[in-house]
Image (cartoon, rainbow, N blue to C red; front, side):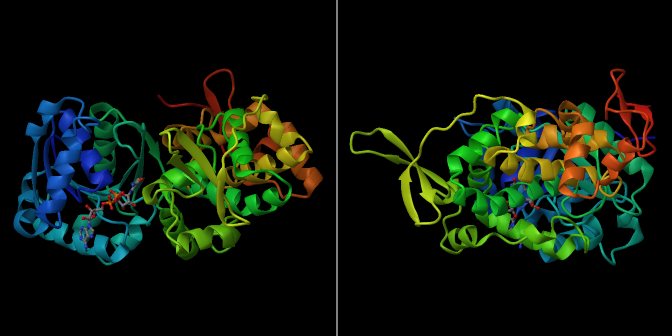
Length: 433
Ligand SMILES: NC(=O)c1ccc[n+]([C@@H]2O[C@H](COP(=O)([O-])OP(=O)(O)OC[C@H]3O[C@@H](n4cnc5c(N)ncnc54)[C@H](O)[C@@H]3O)[C@@H](O)[C@H]2O)c1
């Protein structure tokens, strides 16, 4: 029987911790929010009630949040049903916090980590069985208030009751779209999303030689594919090259040996140069783009010329076509989109059942976590799986798992018109509500 969660202790009050605390407080949970010192946690409290962009929907819900520090208040977690770890993405620090959690928590509590990509088995290696059965990953996306996705990842020993409790709470109390993943590096959304971004940067070098500008690439990798208007470079400006660098390092350590993403885990030379020079994105005042004010106060958007290392005026680029079919065209644009988006679709199609049991969880993760209008398998359906298979055959690309499955099946779409999806045996299965 799942339990009801009414209280949460959030450990770490940064971007994600503050977001999770605010969401839970908005849903009338009793919240304890802790961090390394009073300054940090006071700042988080100010962000939560910020007049211009509050994290809370109802300002008075701040009454549900008590703040404190790890040093003075850690023992209070004993009174909370859910202990949510959201400290900095460093394995050793997370392990330290987890050891402390186990010393102080109530034995009937549920524990989770909000790590964006470190496998749970690494965080909890060698920890007591008592903790292992009560712990899983609840991976929220940023901003917590806005993004629908929460990935739920069990560890090897997580009890069914704990999973059911989280699943119920995340969906019914916090209003999240729950996706079930496996304890593999970067889970679902970030595994595919980071492949897409890193592959995009690597392909960008060659594309720029063919006169595809950064602005053109962003126009290609947005509207025609049903992706957010930031495209590729705009998205990385938002995330920050420092985060992309660490993501790459984590992938390098944890990706399976023969994973197709392995060649792209390091930043390409031009982006590495930006990273080393602190030109990280919006957080550093500019990355690939920046906005300047002219002498008459007008806003000017500039783009960084990666080859000549200088800022130049950014040109507005847009696409007339709004069709996935662009990636089947044998043009410079079409080939770039195929090499980035097409390749990401094939990558996703090879990750069932490694990262998720079925295509529905993968599609939902990309829609709810990366704001794609369609998930990878829905995009392949829009293109027609037969055409994608033909293109793979023409290019001598080995068919990824799910394309192999559909190729050998009597069904020719990943989704039927009957709310069903194609499973690993090539048969349709009802999509569960
Ligand atoms: N920011 C995102 O987009 C995002 C999205 C999903 C998941 N995550 C994950 O959520 C977690 C928190 O990320 P964030 O973006 O909120 O980071 P953040 O840097 O905003 O906050 C991290 C918090 O950890 C605290 N901290 C630093 N050193 C510490 C230590 N030695 N011991 C205890 N606490 C310490 C900091 O004081 C800070 O408040 C990370 O695991 C991250 O990978 C981040």
